[in-house]
Length: 216
Length: 138
Length: 188
Image 1 (cartoon, each protein chain N blue to C red):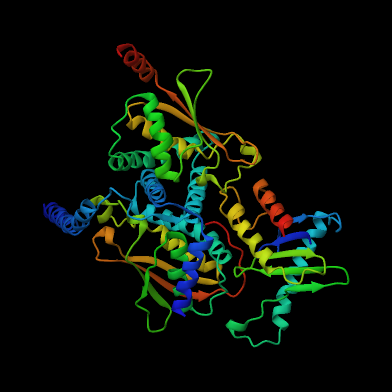
Image 2 (cartoon, rainbow over the protein chains, first blue to last red; image 1 turned 180 degrees about the vertical axis):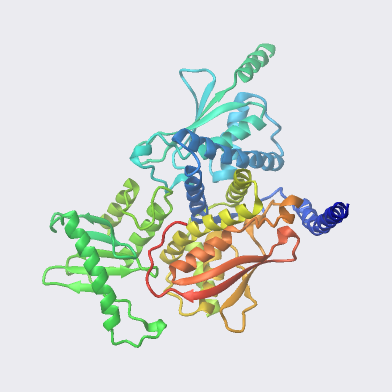
C-alpha cells in the first residue's frame, strides 16, 4: 500500500517536472513559431563541416549494415527526412508554385527550385529514359556533397548519391508523384562523380497521367 | 622541380609515396618504409638536440631541409605531426607553400573521404590526380 | 591576440573555405540525430554516440583548420580557447561563440553559443528534454577530438542548452593533461 502511494507521488512529481520543462521549452516553441522562414536565416556554412559530417554518417551506417544495398537504403532514408523538410520550406518560399501533381511539373520543380535551394544551382540535365516511359533522369555533374568521396574498388557498385536520391524520393512523394528513386555514378571526362538520379514513377502515377492527358 | 613526395604519419609510418620524374630511383616499398621511419626518428632527435630554449613558443620543429650535392629534401611538418616530404632539385629553396597545398589536398581527399582510415596508406585516385596537378603546376 | 585570431578566422572563411547551403547541412544533421534516436531508443546512448561521432570528426577536422590557416601550434590553453571559438567555429559553422567563465587555475573555460546553426528549426519533444538529450552533443566530441590531436586531453560537455529550456547554451571544456608522447590516433 505504502509503496503504491509512493509510486503515485513519484509519478506526480515526474508529471510536475515535465510540466515545468514544458513551460521552459514552450518559450523556445514560441520563438520558433515566430521565426520568419520565408527567407533562410543564415546563408552558408563550411563545406568542410558538411563533408566531415557526411563521411561520419557513411561510416556509422556502414557499421550497421551487411551490404552495399543496405548501406544505400540507409543513406536514402537519411536523405528522405531532409527532402520532406526542404519540400515544405521550398513550397513556402516559392509563392508562385502550387503543389504539383503532374510528373513533368514535379520533375522541373525538383530540377530547378529544389536543386537551387539545396545546391545553389540547377541540376545539369533532366531527361526522359528512351527505354521506359515511366523513367526520368536528373543529372548532376559535380554534386558538392560528394566532392571528396572516393569509393574503393571493392565497393565499386556503391553510390553515395543514395543520400540525394532519398531527398528526391521524398519530394516526389510530397508532390503526389511517388517514385522509386536510385542514384548511379556515371563518370564522364573530367567528372569522376557525375551522378545520375533515376526516378521510376509508380504505376498509379503513370495511370493518372494518362487519364489527365485524355481528359484535356 | 619536385621529383618525389612522401607523407609520413604521426607515428613514423609511410602513408604515401610517389615519384613524379624519372630522375630519382624508385625505392622498393621496404626501402621507402625504412626511409620514412628513419627520417621520422632523425627529425625527432634533431628537435631534441636543438640548442633553442625549450619554451613552447620557440620549440624547434626539427629538420626542414637536407641538402646533398645534387638534390634537396624538404620537410613540412603539420601542427598535428604529419610530415610532407619532397625531393627536389637544388633550385628549390623554399617549398612550404606547395607542401601546404599538398596538406590541403590530404585534408580534402583523404580525411574527408569516408573510406579513408586514419594513419593508413592513402589509396585514392582523386588524391593522386590532384597531387599530380599540383606538382605539374608548381 | 584575440583580434588576431578573429582576423585569421575571417580571412580563412572568406578566402579558403568552400561553402555549402546552411539548411542542407542543418537538416542533414537533424536527420542523423533522428536516425540515432531510432537506432538506440535511448537518449543517453544517443548523446554518447553523438559525442563519439564528433570525436571522429574532430580528429580529422583539426588538420583541415590548420591547413587552411597560417596557425602554428597554440602556445597555451587560453590561446587554444580563442582559436576554437574564432577560427574553428568560424571556419566550419560561420559563427563565433563567446569564451567565458575561466576557472581560477585557467584549465577550464566555457563556450557560450549565442547562435548554434545545428539548433535552427529544432524543438525537442518533452520526453527527450526530460531524459536529457543533448541535441548538439556532436560539438563536444569535435572539440575533444581536435584537442587530442594537439596533445591535449580534455573533458568536454554541455552544461546548459537552450533546447532544454536554459537561457543560453554553454559547453564546458576542461583540460585534464597534456599528452607528451605522440600517440597515434584511432577511431573510437
